[in-house]
Each structure stands twice: as C-alpha cells, then as structure tokens.
Amino acid sequence: MKILIIEDDERARAYLRKGLEESGHVVDSAADGKEGYFLANSQPYDALIVDRMLPGMEGLAIVQALRATGSKTPILILSALGEVDDRVEGLRKGGDDYLVKPFAFSELLARLEALVRRAEVESVETRLQVADLTMDLLSHRVERAGRKIDLQPREFRLLEYLMRHSGQVVTRTMLLEKVWDYHFDPQTNVIDVHVSRLRRKIDKDFGQVLLHTVRGTGYLLREPTPTDP
Image (cartoon, rainbow, N blue to C red; front, side):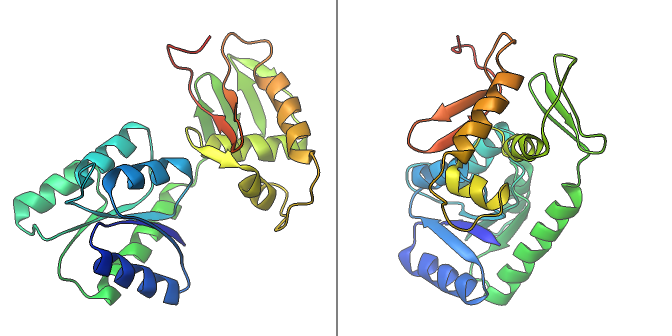
C-alpha cells in the first residue's frame, strides 16, 4: 500500500513511518495540515492516517475538504480525544475509522488493511464519469455529451486512468507505470503523443476543456470551473 501520514508529532510520525515501511508499505509524511492536504491532493494514496490536532489545518478540516472534492481514499483518524462524541464527530465528518491514542501498532495496521480491503470491494465500478464525459468499462464505450468517441486500446487505458484519478495531478511516471507498464523512463514522447490524440478526441469539438497540462508536472482531468474559458 501507499500511505500518507499527516502527524505533527515528530516521534509519532517516525514511529508510524518505520512500522509501516517495515511492513512493506510505501510511506509519505507531512508535519502540518496544509502540507498534508497538498500531498493528499497531488497524488493517489491507498490510505491516509490523519492526526486530529494539527497546525496549519485541523485534521477534521482536511478530511472534510478531501471529501468535498469527491475523494474516496480511506482515512484513519488518530486522536487523543476518545469520548464517544469525539469519535462520532470524526466519522460523521468523513473519517472511515477512528483510533484513540495511545494505540498498538498492530491494531493500527490491521485497521488500515481492513479499510483498504473494504475500499477495493466498493471500488468495483462499471461506469466512470467526469462532467459530461462517460466511460462504460464493460462495453468499452466512451461518450461526451451523448456523442460516441472512438478510442484505440491504449487511449482507452490512458483515459480510464485519468478518469479514475480525476481532480488529481497525474505524473508522467505514474502513467508510464500504470498505462504502459514501464518501470523506467524510455526517454520518448510517447505519453505526449497519446495525450495529444486523446485531447483532440475528448475536448476539441466540445465547449469546455477537461484535460489540462500541468506544466513541469503532468496532466489533470477535472470538471470545468467557472473560471475556465
């Protein structure tokens, strides 16, 4: 699993990171709420561990903001506040589980694994949608505004990955690994060529752009906003 820890206590953060990495997981971490929220929005994670009391941006505010963007990433809230009302508030504001400090690492790991298993079962989708762009995963039919769009197999995989991560910046490395199955950069413009072809098909003849280039970083497929041309 790829996990993000948002925890301001340095010792607790190091303890969690060490335990998770020793368990075979990839871990990123942030020491304050604003940095954590930025990381959570910048790339996909299998799960988040979010401390409730954080500088910069409070833990429950992070959870609410992520849920408001449509994020379904499993979130485990950590807190020294263990009263029933505190736990209920954390769950109602978007947390998937709530663990009271102090805790046993084995319990935290088991809870994380259970959250990810549950998310994997719930994430079996047959239809994806971003704005008026739809993809049927069973029939491989793609439409925008009701108009059928014909895609080559690689274009379909590329669009599926972008739609599954809509609202998130997707890097070239992520696309190489997940769409092309490359675990190295072949130093070609293969991604640029396919993205350009895909953009022509899903954006050119429609009113608003969905697929954006984030200069120096990657690509972003998202709903139109009022400020878009």
